Every structure is written in C-alpha cells, then in structure tokens.
Image (cartoon, rainbow, N blue to C red; front, side):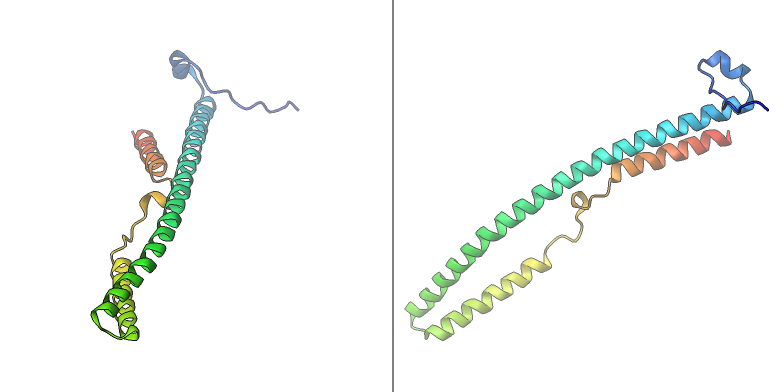
Length: 143
C-alpha cells in the first residue's frame, strides 16, 4: 500500500487548465488559507492600534479629570467666598455652590457621546475587508 501525497496546487495559468480536480481544490484551499492569514494579521495590527488609541484616551481622560477636579474645587470656593462677601451666610453660599456644581456635572454626563468607535478594540476595518473578500470569493465561486 502506497503513502498518500496531497495534491499540489497548480502554479501557472497554463497548468490550471490542465490541472486535475484535486489540484484545483488544493489551490483553492491554499488561496483561502492565505487570504485568512492575511486578514488575521491585518486584524492583529488594527487591534494593536485600537489598544494604543484606548491607552492614550484613558491617559488623557485621567489627566483631564485630575485637572478639572482641582479647578472645580477652586472655582467652588471662589463662588462661595463671593456669595459670602455679598452677605449670604457661609452655609447657604456653599450650599448654592454645591447645587450648581452638581447640576453642571449632571448636564456634562448627559451630554457625553454614547458611541466610542475608536476605543472598543474591535477591528472594524479588518472585519469589513474580510466580509467583502468572502462575499467576492462566494460570488466568483457561483459564476
């Protein structure tokens, strides 16, 4: 009994017309594997870019929040001191300032965008490219 040797895909266009069915299928499988490997590498690179963008976004958000907290505390004290200087009792001045700060915070939170397209680690471009190539291959197979 002999050993099995898998068919080798044809290399040249002239060879394709003379190739057997197993050789053509081997070529098709080889091409599909190359296409999948290429898309996986593209996805890996895109996910790396997405992760890098997310890291930069998070770093900038943390810095911005820290600066805003300090600024908000100082601004709150300033407003409260101005209200005290106008003649309001200290407890009322700080209460008004706190209420305004809370309302401003609620407004900011409600205005935050809900879509975080570049910070989700999903390689949208690679997936769209893979979907397009798969549909192209399916279309050509039907022809």
